[in-house]
Image 1: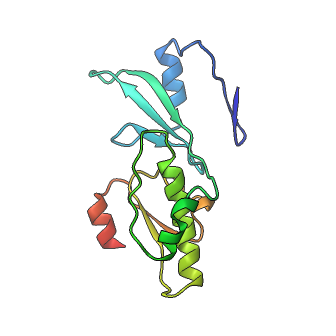
Image 2: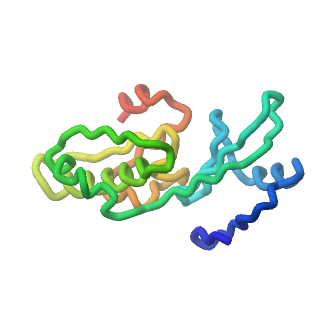
Length: 158
């Protein structure tokens, strides 16, 4: 049993056995073209695994986390306005570190020269959540929700 902010997910060895169960789990969610859906007002995402005929065979839950200080190793680079590239295997904490780095960048922009704005162009809705408002973990950075747009197009609009 895993508790995620008032949501309880049963983690057992018994898989979902019927298409009816999978349909019921997917019904309240809006999936994008990459078969991903974000849980409203959360950083968690669900992905559908489908066969060629479109039959959904599995659901994958990715747990998004806020860890203050996750970007501490690059804080001096952020404060100096340097560019940073995060590389790593899936689940290594790249998004968690990037979310914290964006928040820290926003703080630096508010308190140090040169002043300016810090924007997160969120094409996958992974960093700031899927709600109308950005997840609080990004504050004071701003989020530009760019779902359905190319990253280039979204960055030009910002």
